[in-house]
View 1 (cartoon, one colour):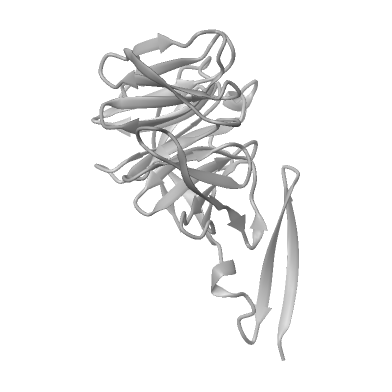
View 2 (cartoon, helix red, strand yellow):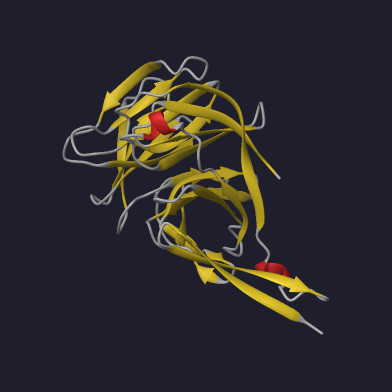
Length: 261
């Protein structure tokens, strides 16, 4: 006798299906999504007016791109103190978005201008401009190509030099399209993504587009800290310590964490 109970969970206006199964497994292997939670290792200050769009770790420092017209910038941060060591302002014409590093270049997306700005990783000098069609949201480097989100369920793969699209994959969560994919972080053979306006992250297989893990990141800020801030956004991975850095738009705090069962 096979009993299957379908459970619909509503989170922030989004619906996610899960199943409880007795006797035999009803879920196909590709439908299984593992649940993880955030283990906070330490916290440090984050510049509250920073509307975080992209975050990455490189050579002992954090690099952050921020958004909003007239407020967008590229910054280098000391991860031991949260102090901003260097920054460059982006023209007020542009709304900054995701950020990735390729060798000595930092590539910063813009939201609607269909341009990405290339900066030197050391002195932040602008080295060039790249073009693309559509919106820019998140960006990461998987070691062979760039992976980009645009707010839909699509991740596009892009050439390092030309920024031309060389492929794409549609992302699904339990067989259903998952949209609002925002800031990205490439780690090994996986892509971690914020889902805009929701307090969870997902781990995506970029070959199939399937979400393999869902990470509960709710409640990172204390109630007093959470007043007046915007949404969770920003993932950076430190391979030296095997830890992640998380923050949000206009958050007063950044978190060094691990994802655990």
